[in-house]
Length: 89
Image 1: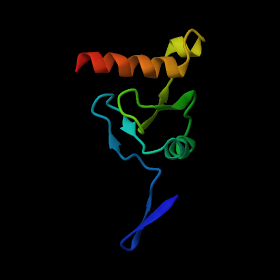
Image 2: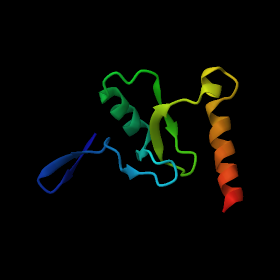
Image 3: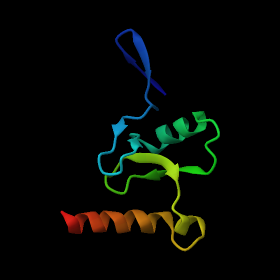
């Protein structure tokens, strides 16, 4: 997916910035994060997942060991982190 900006074409699947809370690059949609993951060489077992602190932001990274072992689901971890962040503020 591209968008026109002046005379240059900009790929919108590039990271939108750096998440201050997670210290990871973030993408504006799951699709953009997936496109970027496909471009990475040797990405191994990295996955696209929703930012635990910001709705609508997506990260690319390794899953926690608890998820890989099947002890927890991805959505459990995201909900738990958002709930914990809400208690801290």
